[in-house]
Image (cartoon, rainbow, N blue to C red; front, side, top):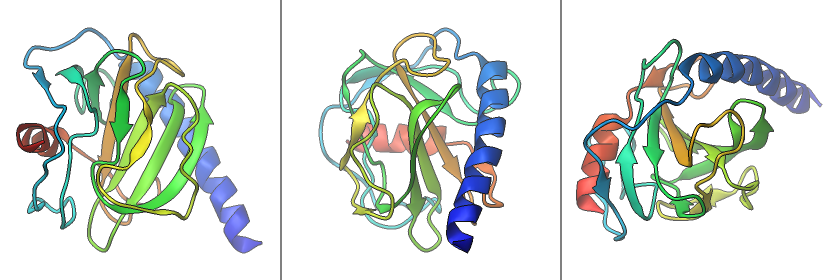
Length: 186
């Protein structure tokens, strides 16, 4: 019972924070410097993002949009791709939350293992089929690129959070350096 109450309180706090952050950011136009990623390679971490293989989360041609701090409260990196293209887990971990928010749309939070950062996937086309508590490996399907919530154009809004995690006392961390490395190696 206590865990259920805590989960509801975290969802409520996260929903309020998400709405404010994503409305303020507004997911604007594409920035220069896109790339493509359709392979399945990875790397060994080394940046505190967690050990083991990592893969770029969008499995299609893509470009980078707004990043951390763009606009007021933007807490992640926008990755633009055609709607319906696959989104996969960047790192291994455990599914912490699968939910819908008016600003974030359909989203998934993956809790990083040990000292790894939490990863968050927003604006998914449909609710993810992943279930809370499930262990996942890098490269497992999360969903598809979409425009749910307050999104402008088809894209994945990707976040990374320091320990103890997403809206659990952690803070947003710029995911772009990790994404660029995973993009090169995938």
